[in-house]
Amino acid sequence: MNNVSLDAYSIFKDVYENRNIAQTANKLNVSPSSISYRIKMLEEMLNIKLFERKSFGVEPTACADELYYNINEALSMIKNVERDIIEKKNSNNGNIYIGIHYNIDKLFIISVINKYIKLFPNMKIHLIEKGTHELVKLLENNKIDMIIDYLPISSDKKELKVKILKELHTCFIKIHGAPDKYILPSIGSVARTEIDHYLQENNITIPVNYEICSNELMYKMIKEKIGIGYVITENIQSNIDKEFEYVKLLEDCPVLHICVAYIDKIVPSSVKNFIELLEEINKWNYI
Image (tube, rainbow, N blue to C red):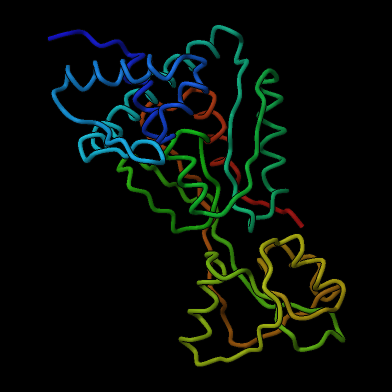
């Protein structure tokens, strides 16, 4: 059996993701013919067809799909091992990429970041705001280290580890004098799915006048007396009676769970340390 270098599998991964040999060659600053040669050698060694040529580029075969899943896992493990060694050697000098749902208030994580940076001053934190589906894809492709989002989070990867960080209650609030126009989270978000189910289950119909993808914007609209907003109870408890008032449809609105999700393979020490700090938080006050 011929030996194929790890580099050949890395090239295969790039071609699979780009679906185009020329684009892959341009990315790697090599000729398209060299990429084609490496793919051909890999096909011959494995005795399988990996790609079919199409007008738009190349299309992976079923064999390529299976190989990609396994190779992506293996390369990610190697990358994380290298990353862990380099970070430890360079006094924890590295980067952590955190995906956070755009519907979650960001201020809660500031205390965690501050504490982490005090412990590891050479580390850099990158926050990426997106929806759940996009965050899961980034996590599966090892573009981010973890996701902070509401349950549920699902993935095709069996190694996905999900830990609940906090149980949060929800409620409707307004400022006195605001009209009975309801401001709800965007359709497709966990918060919206839960409240829609709650309303349907209890045969409650409300006029949904505004749909918002940001909690920050939600609070601004409530404070401007635009309507009745759907918020996290823990965020506004100190301001009830002072600024806001509850709007009760029934006694209890849905409960949401904030969690952290990551791929439980070889997690770099820097990421483990951050997750441990997240789990230490017993109470988050962020409004």
